[in-house]
Structures are given as C-alpha cells and as structure tokens.
Length: 285
Ligand SMILES: [Zn+2]
Image 1 (cartoon, helix red, strand yellow):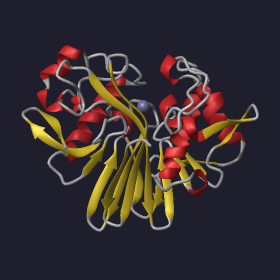
Image 2 (cartoon, rainbow, N blue to C red; image 1 turned 60 degrees about the horizontal axis):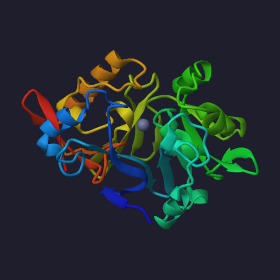
Image 3 (tube, helix red, strand yellow; image 1 turned 90 degrees about the vertical axis):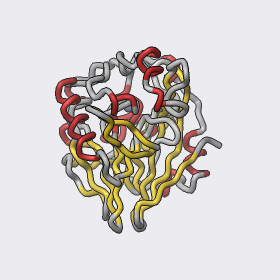
Image 4 (tube, rainbow, N blue to C red; image 1 turned 135 degrees about the vertical axis):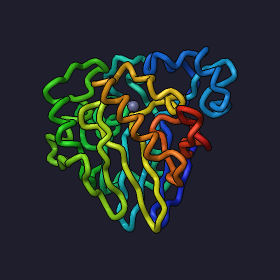
C-alpha cells in the first residue's frame, strides 16, 4: 500500500494516491534545478530535496469528492505504455489497487479530469485488455480541454512515446470525452482555472467550500523550488515565456493567503502555503 494523504476543504475531501515518488535528478524536467541550486535552498529539506540537493518528486493522482461526485484529477503514467522515458515505459505498478484501497475503485469515479495531456497526466485513462486500450474508469466522463486536445491532436510529436494513441485517442473513440473550456465548473465548489504556458490549454483546479480554498497546481510548477525561482521554466514547456508569467501571477495571487496549494508533482506532504520571502516566495508545509 502506497502513501495516501487526505485534506478537507469545507465539505470537500481531497485524497492523494501516489504512483511514483523517488529521489533523483530534476534537471531533465527543470534544467536549473541542479543539486547545487537545490542544496542552497535549505527550506526544501527534508521533503523536497536532501542535503546534497537531490530532488524528491512525485507522480500522483488526486480524488476530489464534492457531494456524491468523485473527480479524479490527472491519471499518472499508467501500466504497459510505450514511452520514451525508460522508468515510465511498460510499468506494472499497483496504482489501481491502491486507488481502490483508498476508497475509490475505478468504477466509482464520475469524472476524470486531465490538467493537460502530457504523458504523466493521462496514463491511467486507459488500460490494456486483450491487446486493446479501453477506458479504465468505465462509469466516468472524461474532461479534456477543448483547446488542449486540439493542439495535441494536431501536433502529436510522440516526444514521450505513444501517449495520444494509447492514452488519449482511445477514450475519445469510445465516446466518453466531454471537451470543456478552461474555466469549466466540474461540480459544486470545483472549477478549472486557465494557467497556460506549460501547454496551450493547461488548467489548475480551484476548490472552494464553506469559506475554505485549495488549488491544484497542475504543471505550472514542477518543484517547490520554483516558488523561490519563478524564472526556472520546464524543458517540457510549450511556451516558456507564458509559463513564466502564469507562474508569477499564480504565486502573487496565492501568497500569504489561507489557500492550500496542492502541488501536482510535489513530494509528500505535497500541500502547503505560498509565503512571500524577499523578492520571491517559499512553499511552507
Ligand atoms: Zn507532469
């Protein structure tokens, strides 16, 4: 059984189910996040980097429960996929069992929401059954950004492997996708918020209930060190300049607020608050 975390935001419950959490280099995704640079930010220790500056990052899914509605946000890497990242290709991990053990069997999910259509956010959209890719969440509607899907459908670069053909197009072909705008209201107190840059239609997810607030970042940041260094962009950014602006606006908007910020790739404990620190920010857990 993997690590499971839960947060209450008013009447809404958010559960984290981890697929992968390991220490290792972050430079392949955030080139400036070198061990030297991370070791300098002491506040990252022990959760997000070790004393040598080795990053700790996570791939996890979040289940939002609002009333009777269960929304699965981002579906990790998945099993049996044909990918260019060696540790992510042809996985045989227990994610679905872990999700079930956390109280959320696949057939109980009402909506699957992808913050964007990158490899580590769409993987469990499908699973391989008798040689065919079928929707994993058989009773769910899948919510894809209209603009996001149009972009990757047209520019299917296969940079990370067969992401579109194995994890995205099969659910579209199965007729279970709703293409939504970037400010779509998913359920009571759960709304998308456009945070473009990493990808064209990238969204974050805002949760509000009983006067309490949380936000799920998506990949507008990959590592908490980017709170201190908003200028560090990701090698996977579609438009780094827009991503930079989005990150700065996001940090300014949520700094010194009671908003619980839940990082999509932030290692355990994953959630915290943005606090102002000189000209930039820190992530306080
Ligand atoms: Zn990602």
